[in-house]
Image (cartoon, rainbow, N blue to C red; front, side, top):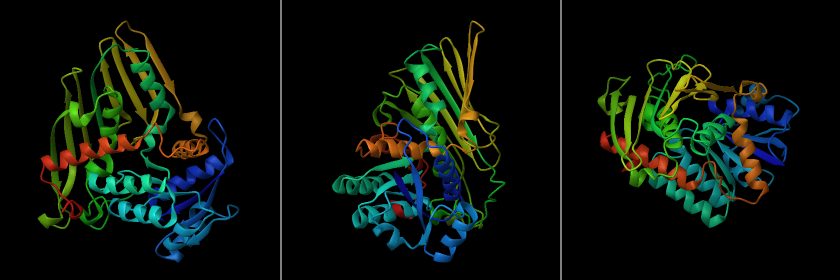
Length: 361
């Protein structure tokens, strides 16, 4: 059994616990491991209590606690970190050092590579599990399509990947105080949503490549400030091109806070045809794929019914349970080294555009 502690009582945590409830009702994965929600932690107990009442409800035995209590509670097996980006590294290092806690941390894993190395050093020292909650990585769509493209070579040799993910945040309007536009909270399209198209590029370009050695990157960030103060500017539009001349592949990616995606978030071009990843509305959730070959044949598959009414966050919870059951400390689907490579790309794009956070000093 995996007993979860939820750290942070914001929007992303509410979506994660909604899917945990789906998993509790319908255990999934090879070992059908049971999951429970032991605690919700916040700086304000009242906020944690409100979160439990609104998003979890009775019958789950969930406690409202502070950070100290959740870190030091021996009954909590894994902490899910749903805090703003800037708080990830300080909290995770503390939770590992003080409580020897296993961690599932929301993306982006940290603000920069240096912070990530601090976390990984602590995880290695204390022999705990650590995984980045890049939820797309754990979807069956993602895993099956990657196999078809590289093991089965259904569309031949991959030549180009195009991915755009946009959101105009209708549900969570971006204001000067909102974390997405707040530089002090790690705001900006690149870290918040640009990490999705980067992840797709990383997955559907040759996964054996090492971006730090094999990719040349050119990028552009369009900066805006909702306060009118230039010092508060963050990127509202991010775009980049990744070239792998050795493998003769290219990816073009973009992300924007100004419009919504239309559901066709990824196009993958090969010598024998093209593959598309389909999502739900303006989410990066990969719910199906369509392959159109040059001979006119079409291969199409949807995974919507497999969600059991959830969004798909429960796939990453299943992965945590399965790896822990084997005594593992990291997932092959999103290894520590893979998090390093994605963070290197994010850091490189920001450096190319002279965009730095306080944590970079």
